[in-house]
Length: 130
Length: 176
Image 1: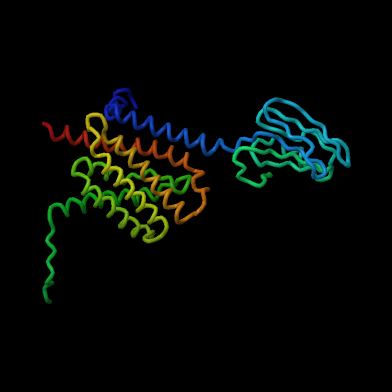
Image 2 (image 1 turned 60 degrees about the vertical axis):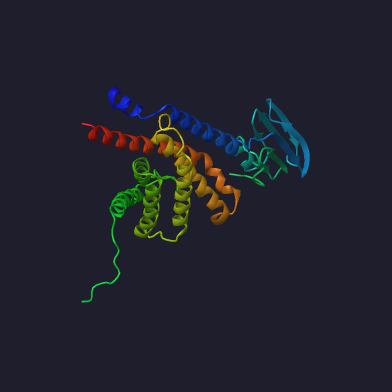
C-alpha cells in the first residue's frame, strides 16, 4: 500500500477517534496488567519431611541446601523464579521441572521428601505442575 | 383462490431496512466461514453496515438492521436460541445502547471510528456480562478479557475505517 492510500485512510481518523483508540489501548493494557500479571509469586517455600524449613523471598539470587533421607537437595532462587538445582532422587523429576515462575507452582522431590512451592500473587491454584 | 384479507403496506423505510439488513446478514454468514483462533473473537463485519446505517439514517434504522441481522443470521447459521445467539443479542443490544448514548458526541471530532470502537467495547462488555451471569458463572471468564479488548480495538478500528471510507466515498460520489 503506497503512502497516498495510507493517508487516505488516515483522513478518516479525527482527533476524538484517536482519543477513543488511546483509551481502548489503555484499557487493554490495564486489563492485561490486572488479570495476567496478578499471579507473580512473592516467595519460595521449601519443605522437608512436610515441615517448612525456609521461606525465601524472590527478590535476589540465593541458594539453599536442604537435607533429606537420601542426601542433600539444592534449591536455587533468582529474581521472580526458583528451581531445584540438584537432588539425590533416582528419577530427577523435580530437577527436570526447571525454573518455576508462577504462583502456586510446585516441584516435589518425593524420594528425598523435599518440596519447593511458589507462593503469593493471586494464588488462583492450589498447585501447578507440569 | 381467495385473496388475503390482511394487507401489509410496505413502506420505503421497510424496503430500505430489509435491503441493508440483508447486506449485514450476508456479511455475518460470510464471516462465519473465517476460522478464528479463539471462540468469541470475530471481526464483526456486519457492524460496518450498522455504522453506515446509523450515520446515514439514524439510530432507529440502525437498531432494526442490527437486530434483524442477529435474528436472521442465527437462523441461517443454526444458532437460533443457542448460547451464541444470546451472546450476539446481548452484544448487539449493548452496542445499540452505547451508540444511542454516543449520539451527542460532536461529529466534528468523533467520526465513525469512534462509534465503531465504542460499539465494539460495549459488545464485548455485554457478552462478558451475560457469559459471567448465565453461561459460565465463574470469574474465569474474565481471564481472556485482555484478548477480547485487544481484538475490540483492532476490529473496531478496521470496521470504523471501512465505514468511514464507505460514507466518504458516498459523499464525494454525490457531490458532483
